[in-house]
Image 1 (tube, rainbow, N blue to C red):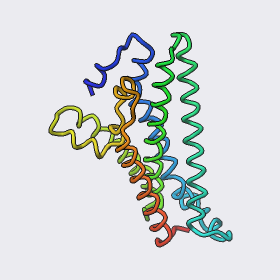
Image 2: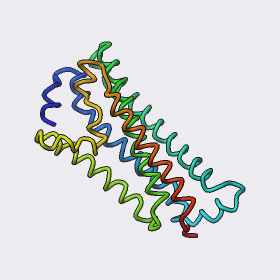
Image 3: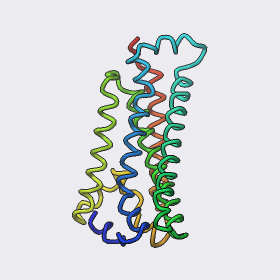
Length: 210
């Protein structure tokens, strides 16, 4: 929101990082939700699910293996992004405050990644129309992003931030108070847990496209 942007001094690398926070989170979240939704639906799309099910593993183990692979992708992308930001900042001689802020940003971006990874896995597991899993996952993500913008426009709309992980963590608070909203961390963990448990359950029950 405009208020969040006003909290940062754009003449400093730390302030610039604060403004870029939402965009970094958005890009990494899109990758996470696509990887998540594709983990299972890809098996059906590529007609390899039949082979997977002939192996001596349960459906749950298939989901676990695919989710771990997507999780590793998310971690690698997060690390690459972090290294890129650190290297890019060197010409501006970043101070300790920058690195502390960057650490908090990357922790919260990781949490946002995990939320959307879990939502993606849920949709990939739950949807019988597997071709739509990825597009629906990205659509939901973009909807939550727009809700984060709308929630900052009017105090009466602030309740919408509960529906948008992009609003769970305030970069201004991270910079000024070095704090992360623990309540929102708990909410994020809850969303992740419910999404994964529901995904496992529904995938174990539904018919597969072979």
